[in-house]
Image (tube, rainbow over all chains, first blue to last red; front, side, top):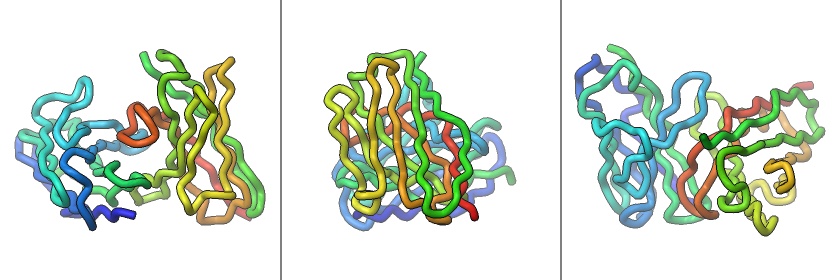
Length: 108
Length: 119
């Protein structure tokens, strides 16, 4: 199965700053078969992007995703207070679908 | 709006089984695959398998084959997952989530069901 690695483990930033989260796959997941999720404490994961770069319904445009093959990036252009959470990447290019361990974006 | 509402928390002894339900509303139950995932504290989610509510077909992750059964009742738009032979490492939050097909992303998710395995 494809193993996903996320970095950094924790990102400490202030509101208004830019967040850059990385997801690396142990083998190619194809050009578009990657999704990102946001999870807040006590809540289920929420889909942010899919198809490598498409935003889910209701997701603001400060969230953008890019990448292909084995290297993917989620960028939050200007952090809002509600963006502090854990973010997971998920690949669906090869079964079984797998998730990364997550990057926590917390308040500096 | 689309909602997936799961059954409540469970506490089970090692060796027991647990059955979790997921009731959907806001869309045609038969039109989308229903996936089950679990998440241990401090870890990313782990995919367990899916059921096609229209046909009843299911596919399980290899590590859960023989230990999980996914079923559905279309008359009440509800999917079920039963896990057998519980061990302490099965303690986790179990989620149902909608999928376009058997392969893809998951959106939305149920609120989660905490299953605790403890003697």
